[in-house]
Image (tube, rainbow, N blue to C red; front, side, top):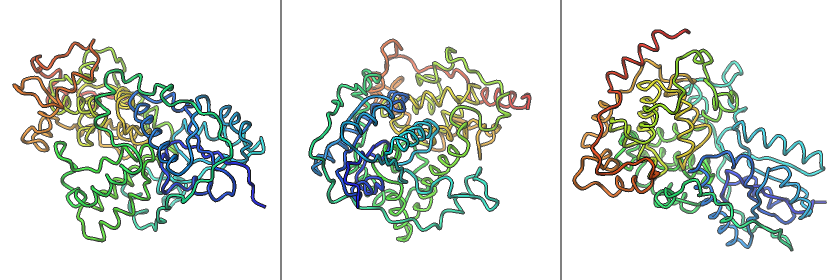
Length: 473
């Protein structure tokens, strides 16, 4: 006999109805489904921009559920006691959720699953956030992958199941439990006056994510090989924002990319590789969770990083006034839009860790505070790759020259003029938005002169190489 007690469908980073195995299983279980989102200890630990963007996604999911005759129950509090209270109120016999793989989520979920099972409650997690579970992809010798290219070769021919459809019906309970009001959570409060600016650049929700994917496949993927390196051009999918909150599944993206490749669209395989790079990040985070907080290569603990965030050079980097145009444009793009072009991310990371000799954790934390597509695995791998301390990393002695990189990828300075106002008679709208978004106590004005470099490209390269050559490991 099937269990007709309600099941709590605990949404986290899977804020969609389609291709959601946990939701599909909950609907097939036989009893009512009560969708739940918790403002729990993991949400509390997120930066300002991720929490702000998360709130928009939760709001969108709630509307999608209402259209299905369901609703999203919101509760605030640590996950385990909050779920237990909901179980007591609703008589639920099960809690379902989609698995996550970063250390904070694993720690929370392990405690929840063990405790609920001891309570006699069915507690089940399902795949959905990744294409490949981290423990299912192994080297020929049985270990995990530490280098990306062999992993890509191992998985590129894998037969990935087709995405699941949205449930036709989500069975509702006779009585709904009380719910918090999303507005009372004030998820945008730490954005301060920047929230209204960044809100102009978000693309929120399952339907919008699907449209974004369709537009990219139709109009952008063919030229992706070259266009993705041009920060002034709309040459990328921008789906990192939607994948972060699970508004679209990686499986949906994968199958669209495969079809594009079969149709002969030239950039499709490169884009598929980027999806697997995301998988590689989670593969490493799962097998070596220290990558999120400490040097993956432990010998780099002896490197003479500056860790003092009060230094003037760090402040200038954060505020986008280093005097290096590529770096400053990128940092301002992030402050205005919550996004930063991937080529630019490599440049600003290289400049901080090599030209300025600052610890990558300073950049990791700053990105976590300001990126709407912040992802715990991708952020950690990206910073350690750039700094030279991570797996499969760019060697420390390979120092990106931010001046020649700008000449190569922004010859006409379209990117620079889009984000830097100083020195222009008629600054662009986007460049001026930066001054509307930043804290007033920074005392910056578009009428200021553009500054000379705090550390020039050549000087920074010499500093970096000297530190590397004289390291103690």
